Length: 182
Picture (cartoon, rainbow, N blue to C red):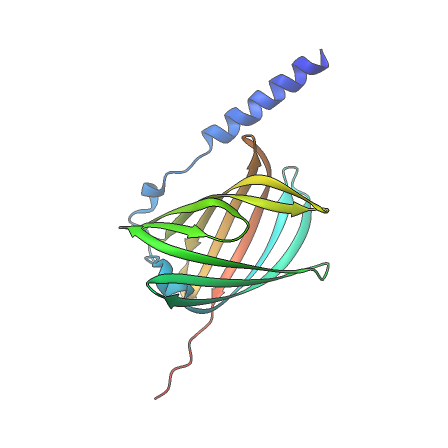
C-alpha cells in the first residue's frame, strides 16, 4: 500500500511539472526588450535564495557578475558569496548560435546550456553537477529571466532530478551603470 501511494505521488508530481511549462513565444511583444550581451556587459549584482519544494528557504547568496566580450563570445565571471560564508565562482562562455538563440558552457555544466530570448524574457535550460554536503548531484535547471525597467531583472529557476522538482532559485539582478567619460 505504501509503495502504491508513493508511486501515485511521484506520477502526480511529474504531471504537475509537465503541465506548468511556459512558452518563450508568449513574451515576444513584452518590453523592455532583453539583449543578453548588452545586459551582462560590465558589472551586475544579484541577490538570491534557494527554497526547497516545500517552500523552506535553505540558502541565500549574493553574486557579482562581470561580463566581457572575447572573440565574439560573452564571458560571465560569477562570484558567489553564500550566507554561511562559503564562496564559489562560475565562469560562463556564451555564444549566440542564431537569432535569439544562445549556448553556454561552464565547468560544472554538463554539455551545453541552451537559451532562447523573446521580448523581455530569457529561458535558459541546462544540466549541472550541484555540490551538496560533500557530494555532487546531476540536476536540471530551467531558468526564466524577465527584464524589468531600470535595469532590474527577475530570475526564477526550477531545479529538478528525474523530472521531480527539488526546489526553486529566486534571483534579482541589478545592472550597474558603466562609467562614462565626458
